[in-house]
Image 1: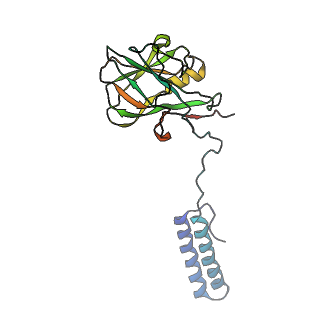
Image 2: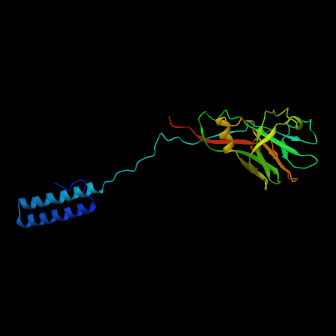
Amino acid sequence: MGGKPSVGAAGASTAGKGSGAAGKAGAETGGSAGQAGGAGKAGSAGSVASGGGGSGGGGGNPNEPQPVTFETTDIDDTEVRSCMPNANFGDLDTFNVDGDPFCAVDTLISAPLDGVPAGALVSEASFSLTCTNTGEAITVSYVDGKWAELEVRWNNRPQAGTSLGSVTCDQLGEVKIDLTAAVKAWLAGDHKNFGIYLRTDNTDGTDFDSSEAADPAVRPKLSVTYTLPVK
């Protein structure tokens, strides 16, 4: 009796006008024609209702993997000093990076990646350090060899490997070292995870809180953001 459900609002309005005209003619002629006109108005209302309906938007894919961030402060870190080649400094609550020609200080930092699942697709990774004394640019490299926090000394330290870039602490507080490329290489087995090596030729050294700092909030932290592949 009303318009087709596929007719939009404009079509429904036109149909209503036509039905109204038929109703008027029925009223003038009386009887059954008037009843037909009334039916025409009802049909018009039905047509408007069907034309006004809309379809809802599609939702997101529930199977799409969501990013997950793994964080840990289970960090090994220590400095080594050229002027004290047989001393170990793994229990200090700070570490330093300094290019002083009379007493160069390098730092090694490492963190396990056991909390990142096999096959994870890493999108971002970083070390967050708390700077307690500003300084000049520091070179960040792979560490090319094993070391232990409470055993490594200047005389037995591993060598710095391929450079991963540099970082500068120019104000106190948090500074981040981008480790995205390194973490991907470690997880893929392209490079063994012996951590990172910090050194500089600049004599304006930089100090950081270490993993032995009394306040857990200022200790070094590794963050890795990843997704798991769709099965």
